Length: 204
Image (cartoon, rainbow, N blue to C red; front, side, top):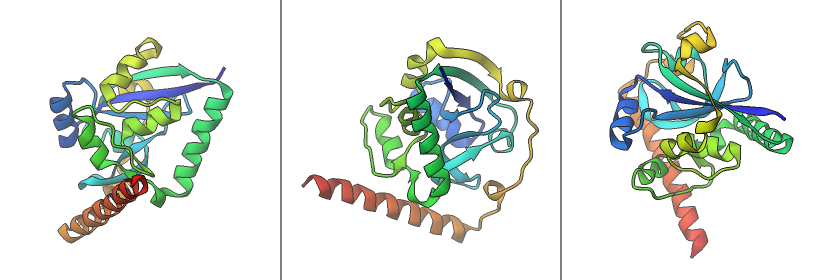
């Protein structure tokens, strides 16, 4: 029976600290990997460190996750059927091949704070995405943490678990001007709002 690896993270970003303060959770982020070494994990998050609002599908490594120092994680090894494993792998493949079709569900993230699930087409929060890969429907990190608690195999330092080197390179680290940030955020929320309108219009 194959396994999927889910990693809950206590990140060092300002947004991460704010999320933990609001949710009262030890972890604020979750990602998924097909590999036990977690050399690369996948999730929905910011695409650039200088812009916390505009996000989408991302591949996460030590450079990105530990840019501001090592982080604490909890790793769960979740046994799944071959069909579930293939479905998760296919979802990752589609997101990698067409990154522009999916975006971060910022509205859904805000709604989840009060326990409301606002699903939008092609938009995911980190927990919505990982839950979908597992065939679940969970909207809060803490809820997924409890759901997978029996599958936990490690809790502690990310760098000790992965033995990975922190390399700060790539699009995530590229400096952005104020104009770049405003333009990206306007595009992100414009796209997100159009998806919300399409969702509402489709139900009328």
